[in-house]
Length: 393
Image 1 (cartoon, rainbow, N blue to C red):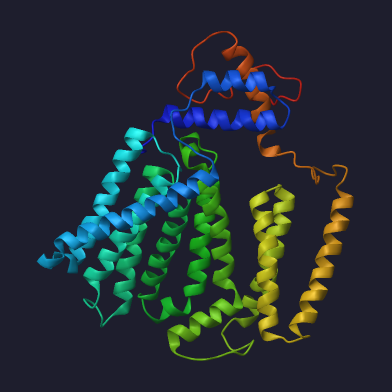
Image 2 (image 1 turned 45 degrees about the horizontal axis):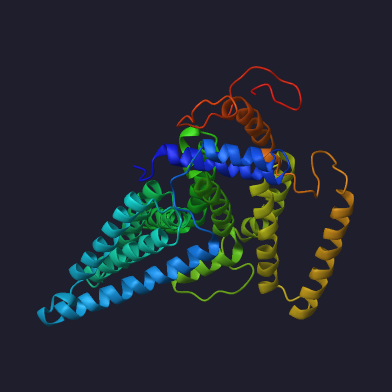
């Protein structure tokens, strides 16, 4: 399914790890150079500035090319059909396939632009083709659209390892399941927030289980993003403001009271308690995704509370909150200046520390011995320990 060869992606992962090891001081510049030479990457991966420039340039080229071609066929009326938009989308996708296979573009900006252009044109063609066909029942229209976007994004993610396509695909899949649940009847409408909470938790649990699997290493970044996104959607599904807004939309009401919806106490506990629970679990399990998501959602909880209870003017509230968080940040930095119970303010990048140590040994044993570069990730193996190595080293 992947358009890239596994050897190229494996070598790219190795190079990224040794570069981090070099930045951490675990590898010298000479060792880094030797490892890079031993594990060559044939993918074209320019820096961020070049990628942005290529992205914009590709959009301009495709826009002018599409416009010129449309002018040629404009008299035939063919341009005024959804099929023509789909044809342009397929042309952009074919160009993407040819470019990646022949020029080995990998997040170069060109391939990213062609992914979004081809996907956007195909979705536009679908919208155009189905517009008005099911106007009597909007849920079927939403169901079909979310299903189409889910399948499209899943294909792009598995084919090109895209993170944003994975995120959009997840949201589309969640929307599809939510609409399907809502269509079951009044019970589905009344329990929709709970269904979304369960679905989001299932997505988070699935990502957490899949991430350690070696077969999923090429999609590691996408899975990490989905894990964080599922935590956010799980919180949003039970957030009081979101639940009330959803109820108003579904039932055509305009309730704004802080106790107007059923189970309001549960949703207020969820709104204020879940961010703290994320932070607590993140600290206990040393899970940075839980911790950072919880810190981010604290702001959402404060804004939700502020939307219903006017304790003080907004400028006073923000000023007080800013002082509190600033004082808390300073106190925590001072407290963790020396590592305490596994936490520190230093950027140790603990999650990859052992990998970096492994990289150095791998480099010494594989590169300087003159053996050729294998095609797969060789980290791990061996049976000796000591020097900070784990039992699996």
